[in-house]
Length: 415
Image (cartoon, rainbow, N blue to C red; front, side, top):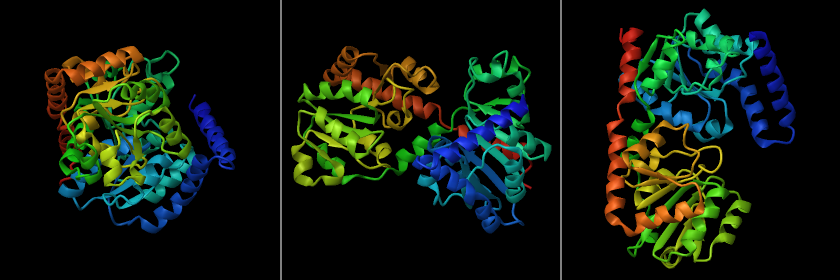
């Protein structure tokens, strides 16, 4: 089966090669991987010991970032190699100052795996959440490189635990230790003989707390939120979300809306504006007068959402009517209630926010209207729910420190 897996990777690489002729993301992936070996030859210090972090994309990077920064601070004698698979991660963080070398990860084919490891020569490898590259893991184990998985979560429907996935389950035995988010994951793995598991929680809690503490003031947002109306912040929204929340906003003059869509290309912004029946302005085109006179502020740039949530009274997290919700913790950390659509089951933090009363889920426009009505009109409910959301984040912090201490103790890196 491993040969079939490798053949599939070769076919996938060939597909990306063809797609790169007309698809920008595929082209960036191909060119980025093509430059990897040159970056490693030029930048890797052969006399240094590298801790290699691999993040599939930007979300996984944010999970691994607290760990990189703790290691950077406590153990500066080690250098950090950071790799991405997706352009949406690499292009945003290619100048991240917390890593010494940053590049794309080549496809998981045997020749490219050996070439990458020969050039990078990692002392230790850390994969973040959902990264199970069988050839990389097998080769790392063969070379005796200590390899870890952090902030992982496992579910019975994953390939490892299907009757036809036994061959792929071998990947899990390649890790020195798997740091999982919850006890359910540990028990599931134990049922298949995987005992090198430690329940440490999710490093994203540490990251959102760090973001909260460092969040900069946004004068434009402060100007817009003047006036005492309830502020609804809708983050990472898709068209399915916008078709529900914008009609509600149009009908409720007591509410102001800050909307940060997941896609900010021209066509989507025009689509949002076509739905609005109240005065609105894009942030890139705003001035003090327009900010004060408008009821909706459209965020048409990336990188501000995590700081904008601090100005909200209620947060709506997009994606729940599509493939799955986006980051709920970025909003919850500010002590405001969180609302999202029905596709949340895969997200442990969403389920637990619902359980503690810090979040609400809606599966239709009618349910959304009822939920927001209650949060807008009942200040006691809004404040108590927000308090539960903030407490939830604070009570689950600390995973990063536990993982770093465990790795450094096990691997004797302190010496």
